[in-house]
Image 1 (cartoon, rainbow, N blue to C red):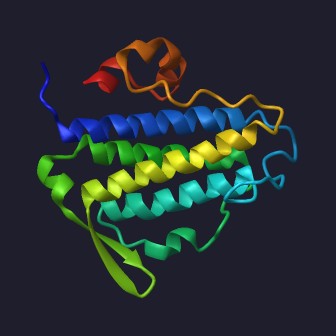
Image 2 (cartoon, rainbow, N blue to C red; image 1 turned 30 degrees about the vertical axis):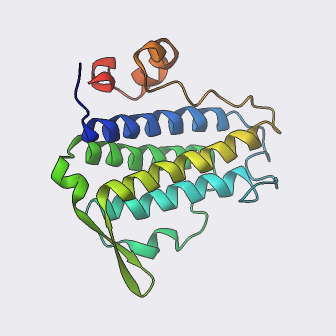
Length: 187
């Protein structure tokens, strides 16, 4: 029996996060003209707004985890992307950075204190707490986009079949598109 490795948990969550973003953005790429920015009922008023919020918050937290000082500049432009295609390219980049960060994690790294540059103050948090928050944030807002897709021409994609071995048959296309292997995901 494998012993609990908290670094493994975060590595797997980072891959799950990237796979879910890939699948969700691929579905959004099939939206009809006007559906991406159409006003909807949710926390943010459109799919476009919600996906832009996800990426700007990712920039903030991933930069902080990497030791950067981007801070609130991450969301100076509230909606930096007008198209799904341009947003998907940049989301993949930040997802790759998060995977790389989690691949390099050690138990000491999980306990390290991260500086979050806030407006006029410095917030200090443990890396594992920041990661937990970031993955929860992603899941929360992806769920909102998923629900909003139900009111479009696009069927909402399955977003929760990534973590366990038995789900490999459902993720093989995305794993190949992202240049990963099942061995990488399952270690």
